[in-house]
Length: 173
Image (tube, rainbow, N blue to C red; front, side):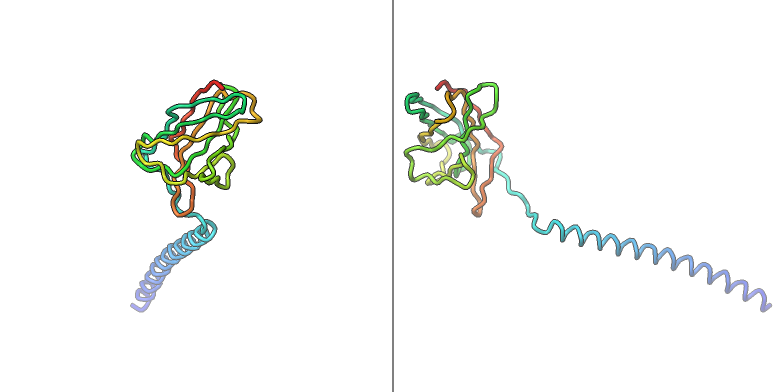
């Protein structure tokens, strides 16, 4: 009878050790996963949620006038969207088939603030929906001006947010 009891004890001990090994395996896997998560969070610690422009932002080039001798273009920008626009990036090119790349320099508008990136301007007050404003830009150094690209900007907490509603307008200067 003693023999049978010792065989039963050995079998239950093997079963317990098998369950303990599985539990230990799961605990180790969870600890590793937690460690990797903490490490990745530390690595990407500076990453914050990136703000985006609302979908209803729309800036158009309503009218333009060229002053070829002075290499100046007068742009009338109109907010056709549902939200205020705080500024814009204005670029030009001498070739209609390529994207605008040349930063146009603001002229005669001392109240408009140029931001850190060349060609990026903050309006003196946000451009309200259905409002328009006239600005003069120099394209000296480009030769002729065939196309203008305009990207609206919104500013939140001193951070410029570029909007995806970029317009590209052919001009003849």
